Image (spheres, rainbow, N blue to C red):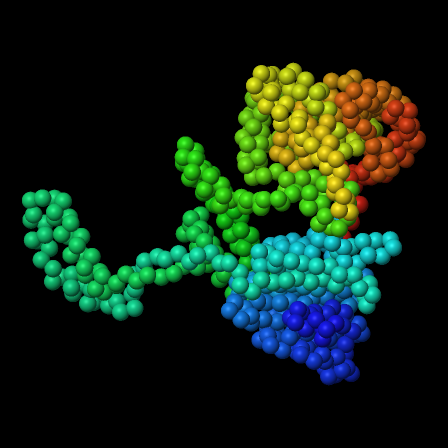
Length: 632
């Protein structure tokens, strides 16, 4: 294949090369290419290799390699371009005996060394880390993200009759230099081929020219000597103060220019006005800690470096945001300067470009709600989000100052969080245990809650909470008039109006949903309710199981009617809406099975439920939760 396409393929990498010392380079050589390899030393299989076309200059970077990590580091020297670091890596599956127990720490250290060189870096290979599953190997993804890598392959690379996964990745620190990426099915392996095109003559930002003083020939003694020779008394005897100052300044500048003349210097890159002296000092401290950690190898030094690195990243993000905010405020009455600044922050869309292509990223129809929400986030332009943020801030202040939101709602509100919701709920359960009571709780899951919001009912509730006249008309225009269509296999459907739901990925969406369900707790007589956006738990306590059963079934019946009237659907599938009876082990040993119903359908009873990220078992031992965290 390489011989047939030698004009197109410059570098070709291999993971799981399965080479060993008994196989010579000549046996796998390809005419026109140099072959570099790193074999697995302690067993069979594994290994990585790379073919580089013989007209490309390269250097093996063994100083970035670790014996325990199956990674090959090469520095590529492209013509008329800065050098690029290339890493070909293979990480065995979790079940493999060849997987390094300290892989993540070693991977982090290697990337830190590469980052120190401040060069374009490309990581390519098989990490056995599925990028189609957000929860899979988060720590590995986080390491790449922290070091500025962007994973650019979007389609599945390993497809079997029972699974589709994206484990053959290509990550780069300079995404703008990769105009094209491909995934090609092949019969050689059960993994698809992945590839990229790298631009060789990337457009660079025009260098800035600044004037600085050259101190190459500066001598302190001679400078002081020349200053002493000046008759300063005559300069200050002038009757005109302005004339005295001008003469003083001219004389002093002449001497300074003689000893430290001004020279013109080109500065690469964009102007970064938010890059303050404070940030530069933090960056220097970060670099110092990296050198120290690299030299000592101590875990405490590496820990200090990571903290400093994260602090710099956070500081840059904050200063950049503050700078843009101040510039917008200064130019609010100067349209040209205002829009010039916006153009710097948000890219413009090319004519004819349609956002529908976003759904073709993974080569399949997106059915997962979270993927859809993530996709729609990219539809909302920067300007729309700015306007939404302004409206959201004003609406939040109005609702909070007038105490219009339910005190049981913990989602998307300032000063409230998932931790507070979990703490409140667990404290209530423990109080019940101390009193010798049971606590029965039903965790309610709503099907596509944000997508089923009835626009008319939402506007009616907004009016009820005092949002009227022009403000209500604004929200009406915000909700109505949206249309959508589907493109599948090159065919586009007719455009249809969006008759329900709040815009996915929007800033206002969660707040509008909260307002829709704000009166839900008014439907309860005997039970309590806890809300985090659409995550709902209804609970009650008693020493008598029958009382809990009656109270829950009665209030759930009222809630079912309320959900129906508000166009919301309860998901009664196993693993969605579930019931759990909390109590002490001694109390639970005497408990009988309970029949909890919603609209005449039984609610599945479980031993533990994951509420807002915390696995809460029947006696709050958190054994399962701790086991889950240890596996991550």
